Image: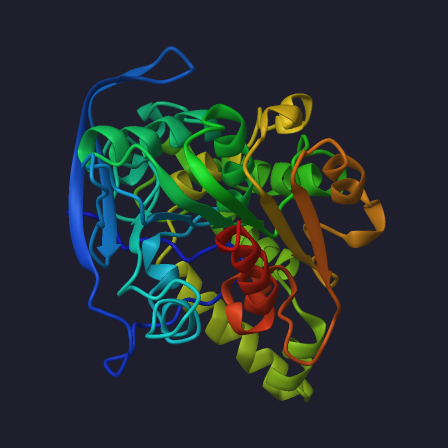
Length: 356
């Protein structure tokens, strides 16, 4: 029996609204046989679960021209987007990605959601996947599974944003545009690596982990999830949600209950370790599609004072970077999943493409 999909890094997931104004997503599974991971490990079968919204539109040669690929963050799944504040804004009639115009594909990455993952049964014997394996499987889903050889847009949040940069380098002629959200095209180092390493060690060094064969979730998972809360924090939002000591205590108690109920130690450990060799900085010149990167100034994971994206964007031929200022509406790293805050920048960006 599949375990529940884990929450996306840094954002509380909302249940899809019954009154949603976007079309009902269709759920599917795509099987990849005899998949070879970059680590040298293999699986006879990898299941990639995904949802689609909208209908493919084909040109006179039969090629799909309106496909949009949306990629989730570490520990998330396609479900993190199926709510009123994301899908209800972007996919609704007249929305930036109006589902009557676009064919939207949102996969659960390997190791996440309802795709193949350690908690299915292999536990710590599951292949040690990396971001490159995820992108390869996304590509196979589109080309081999859906017959999509061209994308109007690739976009993603956090880990999905990092993979958007990778898509631009690996398949530079395959998309019209790229919008990475809450990410940076560089090696994960400094504080960004340190908190990840802390979480990895919280789980792996816990005696209750038992080499991945625990009978109940180890205590180290509690410490790791607590770290997730901190790195995803948005001080203004937290102050509004917990304006007193008692409210704060109750808030964190409820957060931990919700997150621990849907997290698995092996799944989270693998998801964190998947970033170990991420570093697209050496090949940024390969990106030829117009690219709009959007980060927020209150993002703990991508702190603006480092100036990393601004420096590297100079090497992207058609790249632009927007740093959102802190407002009462921004939500730290999780601002990526609230398009009402950033969609006008994306709308202007895509409008320029359409006018060419």
